Image 1 (cartoon, helix red, strand yellow):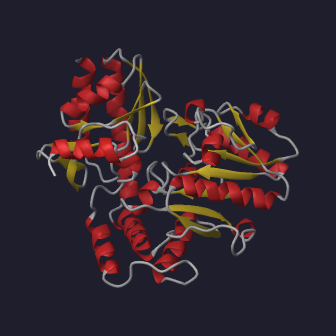
Image 2: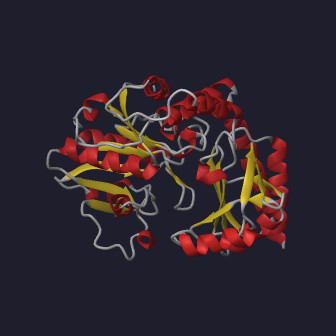
Image 3: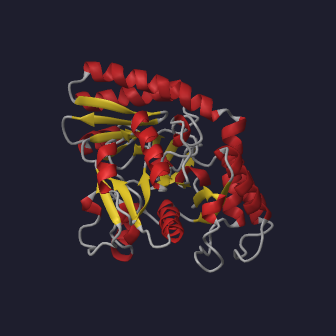
Length: 391
């Protein structure tokens, strides 16, 4: 199939729910992608954070090939070894006793968290969320998302969600009623512009939840699996959530979502109350196990901390030279560069020069390279970015 045929097929047969860029990628390895013409790109935004161990990581590919030869799928009313191992491994990394629900995406994981909290609440159903949050694109998760643009055209929203300003404990307290069951937040708001939660705010929020018998739900769909330099972002804050969700990076490129909850809460969901046909299948679980093993064996948390500090330093040096940069913020290898102008043209210019990045919230350039990124790759990326900003 040639390029015109690819573009025409998308136009005629695929729902136009994505803003498309005219690239057809045919190969990926590590932090690089190659398009159909053979041009090589440095990928500093691999799949919204899905490619945290790089494209086609050898350990992931080996695990998947091995599993494909043995068993592809059985439903969740049977047991599989890979799923049991993955649940045990996630418990190890969480560091506290929790139970796991497997699904296929971050939105599904957050839906599970919402359903579990309502079941736990026994009549309490309201969930406090935050402005500029993003929790998914199902009806319930866009209702939880604190950005009106994702809700427009899909009203009426499911009831029970209250959105308040981020990093403001007083507004959380004012939003509380006798119907409130949980508070749901991202510790680094990804789609909202890389807004980082203050440690004092998170500490106060945990205390408030304990006092009011509320569940703290932390959305780690984008921040989880090493992105911030620890396996989960909440491990930076000295708190433990009651429920947290992960997805994206865990599958190494394969679709997975996971809700993890303290055992006494998780047991509220009995047989038939929630399900996911493909959730935690044998192939996907093997891929996720390979991701976790690679992070450990290749010391990628340490590399994320080291390269994250280096990227932070380089970005601040760039900001001191470039008046278009208003602010740099982030954590680990998750950085936002807020501009004084819209960022779409900068993203396009970077791609022309062989660098793939993202713009969110109109004016925030977003960089989320693989956890095994090298100093040389960061230098190359920043050189291209600076050229684009000066153009």
